[in-house]
Length: 466
Image (cartoon, rainbow, N blue to C red; front, side):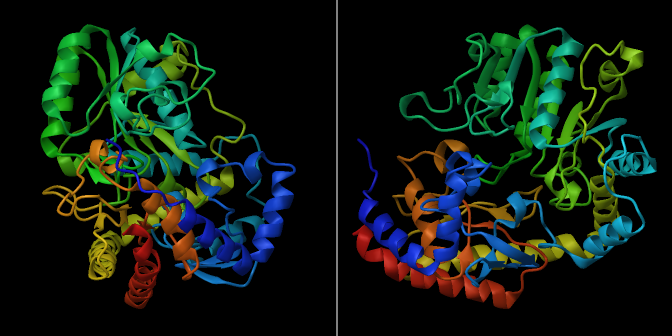
């Protein structure tokens, strides 16, 4: 029996008020739709009825085309853990451009060496190669694993998002009776469905079953130590230890997708906090400091397949903008800053995360709407500064896996995604997936502003939920 509420009237009324309050962004959206698919180039940014268009971003706040100051928790797809445009980083880039550097040269310079050394030192990787996006990083990691093992099957978890690449486009969204088993796109070869096997996040027993069934055909198991799109949830220590033991036993490659989790909990990889060293890891988001940088790092013998010693058997040869000098300068500046200030940055993020999550939950529950944040930690990971806000239908439900967090029969996803995003913008706050990421640029006053906005939203939408 479906439990979905009908939010059509609420969304229509919110959308009408939003259009009146954001007229310049509305006009720009109409122009954009004439030349861009749906008005933009990233689907998640294209909220309905239209997105706000920023003209300035500084710390925790953005200024939009209509002159609204908006408290932002999207923070560059969760990449900006220090807030928008930290001055130490933008100043470094400005000096670089003023010195006649920064645009593409087509050469390999010292910045690549220095950033690779930083990544190897902080993550345990033996070799690194750079690319420009998380999607490409996970794709290349899977290519390396398949080339190294000579096997075809890629094992992943339901709800895990590894980018818009062939082996990542299965089992991302929850689909009724089949759960996380569906293909996410048209255009892939029919054989791709059989090449990707889906298991359940944090279910060590099911993982063992998958290896018993497919073990000698599994090229790799790719998993996020802290799952992002699946709910902002930490991996259970037993799950990752089991993954390490099984991949070693069956000769498969263990890949940690740390695009979201890397440098989010410490100045380095998250795997080390679990005591688990993967064979390969993909990094992005935080490491670029707001610039397009991603990397694959791992065991030298696997990474060698992309180079001359390995006969260049895997075509991880780089794109035009791989190792872009301005991007690598941003990465070097950001990583050095995180390493130097690790003892202050990460405890502060945890402190702010705890305050944000409790504030938001209390604001809604005090108004009679049961709400739960994800991002809560476990014995290994502290509470995450990145979280979703969910609205379970039943009080007392605490989603701890994508099977609950992204299941529309358990949580009111339309309320948490579409309704909340528009309603919160009307209160001067930008959220994604119900909440987003707290940064060191956010203050206690900002979180009080967030809580007050949530209370007003709860009072506005409450009558529609009866």
